[in-house]
Length: 231
Image (cartoon, rainbow, N blue to C red; front, top):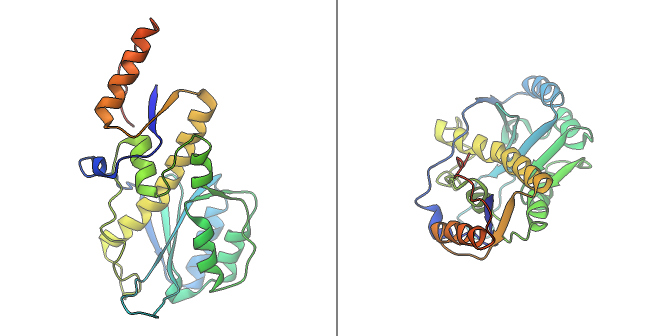
């Protein structure tokens, strides 16, 4: 039985172990590379999506989307849109209706991408909508992942310069992790919806919540299952 919180306490996230993408990370900087990457991505069944934008620290200053990261289970492509723009191949990827594309706050991301080029988004799944069906009120990727897996997505690179000449390894890993975890969250929510193996509880400390579930089962004379690994 998995415990889900209506709202995950942000203070609990600090002490959680960090999750990092373990697969290949490929940076795309030319239209030719973009074409090959998109051909590969469109052969997959599900993709995790996210974007990064260079932060602005001046009033009235705004940058366009710098990076589009698209991940499979084991490979993440980082499309440097500040170098390539949105090419016809990327539009083909965004408009495709066969491959499931999973993201979080995608309404905002799509608005930002539309400032670079016109396209009709195809077959995107908004994780916030899926989580809402469970009664989960968390809206951020970090809190959703912590709620489901009791692990932390580091946000240390979020305000870094996504338009610098060469992205640092830490930036690449951050970007890939964000896109990949979208797949993880979606598939876990799909599993829980199918199996019904979860209980939604009010925001309390993690240990307290687990204790309450055990007490509830004992009161009903149910067998209390052994603790299973978080992932």
